[in-house]
Image 1: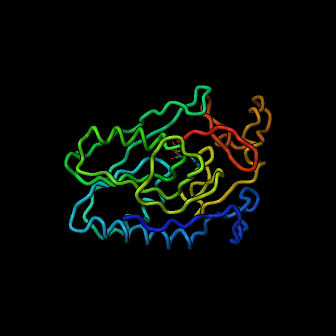
Image 2: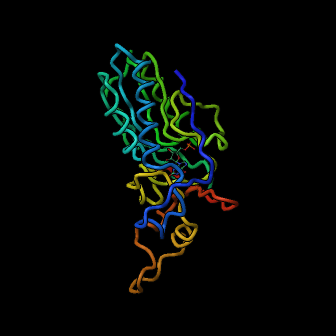
Length: 237
Ligand code: XMP
């Protein structure tokens, strides 16, 4: 069932497209590499689930691009549903996980493939797996695009992993910073100035804003931005 997991190093040779150079410092995983790897994951999942119908359960919102590409390569009968999870920090790094959308399909006795964008501390997958197990599926397998193994706090591993990445805050291919950059076709790392600008207090009303509203972090939400020694907190949205 397990495939070899390509390990990504902090440096990458792929050039940042001119359109994104002001905000994106580097491409960590190129569009072509992602596409190749997603096809491999779909092939492995297909082999392991031959002859069975499965329920794909994806966590919102970061999985959208990965999920769309993954399932279009899965030549299996499947049904699709979503769970919404957000974490709202209250001054602690872990932040409380809140379910914003519940599963609607009945998974009792079914094979479930749980899909997430990135496995970091493991707190999200642990919580979601516990919730799913209470619904008595026949089997649950997990698939994540990215695995930040070095950050793990909970003893959770995914069955299918796209790439193991270093301890960096990444955006693109569904992953966001303050809800932006999800549409990048690659996985990349932002310039520090993007975070610095986003953390500036909002200017008083009537004065020109330095940044669009979307880049100002919502109240009470925290986000971990790792790169070098810069460590802040993050939340999933
Ligand atoms: P845990 O720690 O619960 O985290 O395994 C999983 C969720 O945290 C978010 N996350 C990130 N989001 N870039 C992002 O855009 C990152 O580098 C990153 N690391 C963690 C994400 O929502 C993930 O599902």
